[in-house]
Amino acid sequence: MSVFLLPTLEPVINRVLDALGGAKFKLDVEVQNRKIDRLYTMAKRDQWNLDDNREHFFPPDRGGIDLNEWLGVDDDVRIAAARCFSSFYYGEHGAKVISAQLVNLMPTNESSKFMATQVMDEARHVEVFEGILGFIDRIHPMNPFLNAFLGDISRVRHTGSKLIGMNLLVEGLALSSFRMILREMRAGANVSPRGYRAIGEPIESIIRDESRHVGFGVVILPELLHKIPRRIKAEMRIRQLAWLGLLYGSVKYHQEDQEKMGLDYVQLLSDVIDDHEKRIQDCGGDALVSTERMKSLVPTMDRIVDRFRRKER
Ligand SMILES: [Fe+2]
Ligand SMILES: [Fe+2]
Image (cartoon, rainbow, N blue to C red; front, side, top):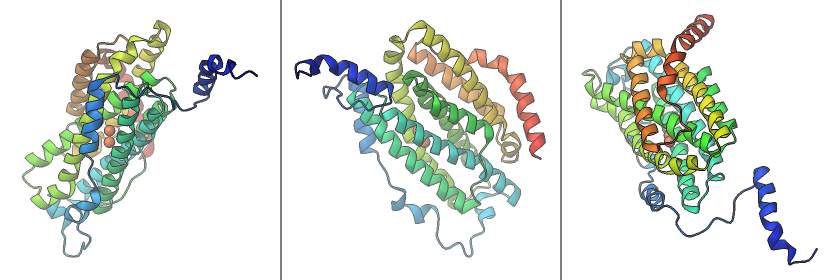
């Protein structure tokens, strides 16, 4: 084959490699979107290391510590909290895996570099929940609705869909849940400053990272969604509806645990939905499904989750 043929074959070869899941190695070094480049700079600047504060959060010598007194709870509430926090732990694992997939799907150099920082952030978040759960109880089995939700986002091949699932829905759920936990801990007269240090302070660090991840989704999605054909957009909307149903199921699954902890799961869902609605407006894309549609799924999801929980008992 003549060497002159190679440049003409290159786009074809790249398309074949992309179809096979090959990496996009030849991204333009010129910055395409300054906002994303700024987010990448912030992400590098704001890296933190749990090891620097591990003993400050989780004292290694547990002798003499009355954990229930620190947290202002009894055993029942502490174990309910560990079940809810186990879902955060698995959610962070899922976020790490899915953002690693997205590194390879990003269309520009700066967005791929940003996504690489998100992978590291999520690895740190997994580490934080390993620490919290080891301190207050243990890691409990995975919530099946969360498993289905994360599993489908990890399987979907379309970049726009994966980003909506990861950086709007998963991140949005994490942000709203963490904010609610912190609000309740700060308002709870029974939580001691030492108890807040073990759970509240590490979660504060996570919230700063998650806000950046959501911000990235809102900046990059309008551009990506603009180029998507109508047929794909219709598929994306149907998929999101299923995801919103699973998201609802994964919160409702912990209803009893949340009630023991004094958290209002309806309020949490309403926060997630309101925030998602605002982000949809910010993205302005017609490939996004309005959360209004999700409300029609609520009675069905209630029945499914309740039946599932009854079988588990
Ligand atoms: Fe995270
Ligand atoms: Fe995140």
